[in-house]
Length: 229
Ligand SMILES: *Cc1c(COP(=O)(O)O)cnc(C)c1O
Image 1 (spheres, protein in one colour):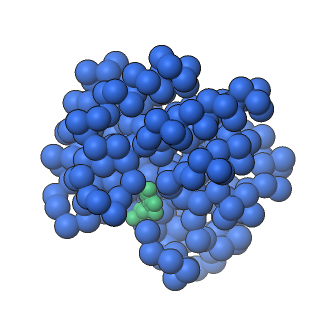
Image 2: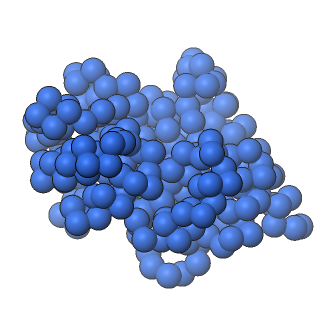
């Protein structure tokens, strides 16, 4: 099979599984959107994915995303790029310049840096707060007990457009409890967007209310072995 036919087929399968999961949860089909996680994927797969009509992409590193999308942005004006990986404050301006959404706000200092960058650049991406639902020390995200305060500070003190929450459950636990916790924190803060669910668990995430699922390997195929995240 050619790359394009592989990608077309893989995307059709994922969209059908998303639709079935939404239907099973009695949710409207258009209430869940697919974020194609393009990190570490080759140019031919990226071009093939664009040719399918997919427009929303997730990247976990600023520099890598610039290299992949900096030029393509101009050719695809309806592209939506989401930063789904941790962000250092010294890259806040680059991130605000490139991304339409930053899904990994996880500390007050970063909220301040994003607000300053948005002010300076005259544009502000949508913001999701990343919650470390498993309280894993090596993982980014605010711990659940401090999430409400960060959400309020980001919105009220820094004026950021906080739309929702993102989480990455621990790899070695059933994800359902983590998805339920994220949905609960979002609900009590009046937030509508939930970015949760990856290749292995997006159907469960849809059952628990995901509005974005972030799918990489099940959509593009295995990533190049540059690094593991
Ligand atoms: C890489 C990555 C994904 C996609 O993972 P797959 O298992 O390949 O679907 C989703 N979310 C984040 C934050 C990632 O870093």
